Length: 446
Image 1: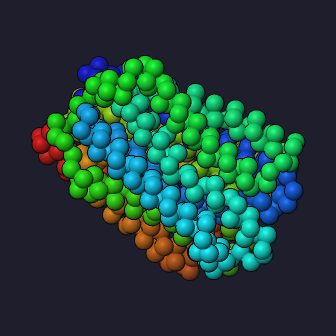
Image 2: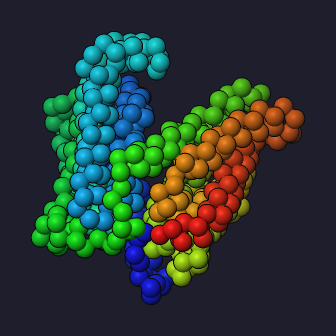
């Protein structure tokens, strides 16, 4: 298992975590720049709508390639394990690229665009093809970036993450500025190209930085902390990978499940609008919590580990801070001003969104707890229960939503938030129970 520092402090955890927390926020900024560009080019509504479709299809098909980072952190500690994970990641990236290419360069794409997505106009379909023919290469650049980010993470060099994203943002800003002023290329083509090339730039920066610090990949590998001393087999890697891939797919169904229930409520349009605004704010506020599992994965081995209490407390404090920010938006004039003036939704919608935000205010604490125990399970290479717990979560959300919409006298958007929170609580409790039960056993084996 991962060797870690015996002396650990809140400052060292904060130094490790802050670049990770900033990463999803900066990536969100990159997507905002892309949408702002499309809004300034010909056919803005068409371009924004179609790019959302292209982005959704691309993310659904390419998301497993994001796990290349987790595979490196969990398995790689010497040359033989590196070679195995390196081959697995690149084969995975190539397979996902071929799947997307089949949609981008064959009539199969038109079938998906028209029958599954619902695009009907020839220009919509043409724009979708134009974007997907670029984004089909996304899995390959994601493997490049995430694979080497995994090495940097294992070495605790998270400070390399933010400069790479800043360089990506500078490239995107300049290229898309040129696109707007020259209008030399189709907007959706330019945005798709900036997305793929930008991630490639991040990956190249990480590779160059690691090689500059260490001199060679071999020296990088020699610097990695040892894990359990056993060379992983391909079967073990697949057993680790599949539940996480399933979990990512199930996570994508959480929001559509709630939206589907709200669409069938008595106040469908208003409910969807209220929930949509609240959900966007909740996701923005919670984005820094996504990498919390890396703390327990890198610094601890189980609940009996000397570093465990410090890591768990740091994670819970992080969740508590985000929960307090959510409560401030839900209960103070700051939230009303942000929603009614900055976002410019009506007074009625604003007041309803604030109620929904109050329900969501417990989510950051729940998530911080779950992420922390996820890290333990990934460190033990036992991810099966992660997928099972997520499946229970989604099923419970659907059941609670269906029952509550018929018998509970609350606004449907509030019920939607309560159903989501119920699923998250149960999932986190299952993860916690499993982790505690298996911590001592896993520590003994390693």
